[in-house]
Length: 556
DNA sequence: GCCGTTTTCGGCCCGACTGTTTTCAGTCG
Image 1 (cartoon, helix red, strand yellow):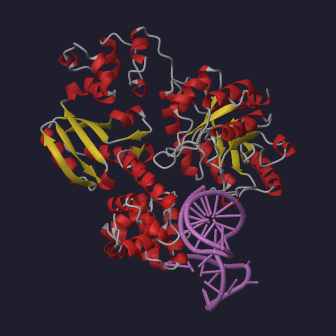
Image 2 (cartoon, rainbow, N blue to C red; image 1 turned 90 degrees about the horizontal axis):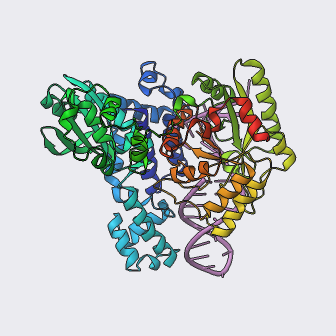
Image 3 (cartoon, rainbow, N blue to C red; image 1 turned 180 degrees about the horizontal axis):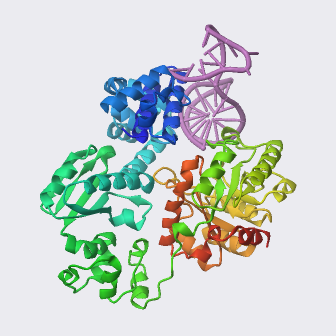
């Protein structure tokens, strides 16, 4: 069992205990343990072999025993026992915004409802409003929430799909006679939400691939199998398709299975694909098609085919172009690691700079820094910079944009910072005009360098706030304010459409991890995918620049 | 259930919003 899976079980235990109205602190203890495990740097198995599982913060003797059981048996009897007591349908309901365990308990006890379909039906039949503390609005939110849930159940974020697809490919790769196995389709194109995992496999012996796929520990079900095609379901209801080809057909199949349906139908139109047999690279397939090599992220038929035929594609920004990260949290606010640890991790990644941007004072829950603490942090950063070579930590802050568009610190404070990222963390429901003006006011503040996660969307969970994007882009262009592509796979905000529009207007972009954990610095790769889908080049992205150029841009 | 340089028992993050109520419980970040 992986750390992530252990964390998921602990989190589920917390949910079930909460639905049973158990001691809230016990619930919290499980959540805390889940959080610690999720953010662990080390594999739990290694800790287990060192007999050090209980050294993890938030894990005492009870949870330690449960984790050890999970590692030894791939199961957890306490979790299984609770699963029998708490219907899965109640856990599903927790995902609906506005429904917590107490409300769900009342609904389940008074109306005997234990699944989403019955809940939706009761809401539509106006039965929910008969319960204490619930009214028409509650019913409306339930119906809306279930609709959203049905949509989100069809697709998952890259953050979930990519690690699963990589692990699955690796497993297939270990099969006898397998030459290649790699994720293709929408995952390879970097679409922010994907419906299934597609894996292209080339192998000498097709039947052995079937056995290898069936033996994967997360394969729940094979729903359809042909000689060269396997369709099925993995854990968490993740659908997959495995396409199997002969080694000599691998590269043209790679192009075929990576592009969108429209894309491949256009570029291979009227072409017998057997002419590509034996080709040794994707580049050669494109050469034979009379086209410029097209990066996977662009293969969507959105104008790139014409450009590729005229050899006019831009050179897209690459992950290795990034020289730093301009939005990162530490344990001074709600990050998991110290200033020193985060800086060391960034340096290890090959970065040459990092802006520490903890939360500002109004964000109490996230440990927002008072002016005094911010000053202290500034001194700590200066001291750290004295100690490390060939690396610069910039003094920054992710300052809250308050309801009226003013910022959470006075200008004199902001002036002393190297990097000011301004973001919204409250009043998500303002109307279009108020919300737009609020952000424009922040853009107009001369100390603001970057707007963080502009639209506030959370993929599969929360729609963007009401914003007049065009007006905001005009203001950002006028004030030379940088827009962030927040690389967290739950956000990818701004999205590729806005990013494309922004650079056309001369706005610069920062690809920021918004890491709250040193491991999360690596999430930058998802932001790069988004930028590449938007057609961005190195020069469009300021954190591919060296630090002097970045600072100069902010000060200009 | 976890934790401890005040504690092995008695605490554990808290302020604001939402939708329901007429003073507040539940939810969320």
